[in-house]
Length: 132
Image (cartoon, rainbow, N blue to C red; front, top):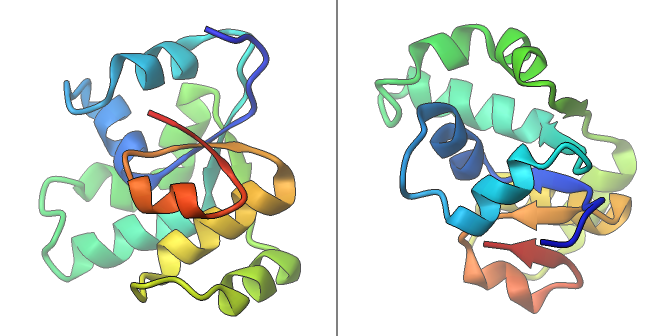
């Protein structure tokens, strides 16, 4: 595995990492656990988890929805705020589906030159690096 990757976790990758879920690929698990790989988690993921918990789409995510910041800090991950630049890039994207969280994650990966840890093959059509 290449060392020194700067990672951005997609929301599902974060959830699967925290749960120890086998749905997370071994390459992703190895990269996230690599000491030389800084890992960022987007504010977009905090909003996505809180929203989906509130509307019942993530019923088992109560703790994460209520203490996202603390859990991210416990993991040693960096928080990635959404900047005006990120939002503008996300809004300009012409992608086939309307998921605003995906748009923001792609924009952040582009703007910050981060490797997006995601199983979303759709992301490969954008100027980003994806690890899965």
